[in-house]
Amino acid sequence: MRDRDVRLMRALAALFCILALGFGGRASADGPSIEELAAAIVKVKAAVPGDARSAKTLGTEREGTGTLIGGDGLVVTIGYLILEADRVELVTQGGQKVPAEVVGYDYESGFGLVRAMSKLPAKPLKLGDSATVKVKDRVLAFNHAGADDARPALVVSRRTFAGYWEYMLDSAIFTAPPMMDWSGAALVTQDGKLVGVGSLIVNDPAEGESIGPGNMFVPIDELKPIMADLLTQGRPAAPPRPWLGINSEEVRGRLFVTRVQDGTPAHKAGIEKGDIILGVGGKPVSSLAEFYRALWGTGPAGVDVKLNVLQGVAPTEITVKSGDRYRWLKLNRSY
Image (cartoon, rainbow, N blue to C red; front, side, top):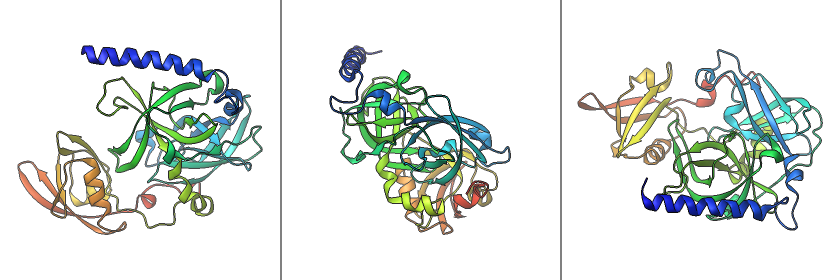
């Protein structure tokens, strides 16, 4: 490890100690206590059928965190926890087990909503304004362990996040130090408002800086424009984006196909693992973000997408009739 990295990590470690002391027992001097905030945090347990599309990659028994945001028992979590689930259970801080139903799922943001089928003994958290969250802000992260595992953290970057599974956020929230139970974790400001939901642990939370691992949170502002649609029809009303059904990885300016799911549009068109994606419709792409913007700019789901691909040593153009991922997934069991 370079001397610069060692100095930076030591400085951040000292800062995190200061953060922990600064928070004390309250999110802020005049805000709710950590215990009051934690009461709105629940464990989410989901059972998924073995024939679900996501069963092989995400498993059939999933656990994570949810946050109560509505007086009617509405809970927000990260969507992959409840994706294709046919049974969901919530566990309160007091250990009460409450059945829940899936309300909605949004692939583009990654959010999922469930509703407790009986009253939860807690006050909902208010939604904050994640657009105002900036680098160096002090925040609190809660997982389903509640107050016992509440962690002070620092926002270390706000930037585009492009995932290998045809997913992108324009301004994800990255924090450090990491919380290990990150799935669905609540990111809370000092005034006690929810501004993000935990999605991943990452190795590079601070862009261009070596500080060790951290977490990526989905900004809560991504939920607000689609909330009404999720509550009424289980998914956003806007036309879905074109979906191919591939996983890809960005390596030194080249996009390698790492997985093609059987029966997906890409599989049917002849895209294979190991192919290199050179462009979309003749427009070169060299990053996941460029690839997704070009792909989603071709039109709605169902549009023909012309991929420029290197298969072996021969560049070729392959036309993929894109699909609707919502139709691919087996969602009708839950909503």
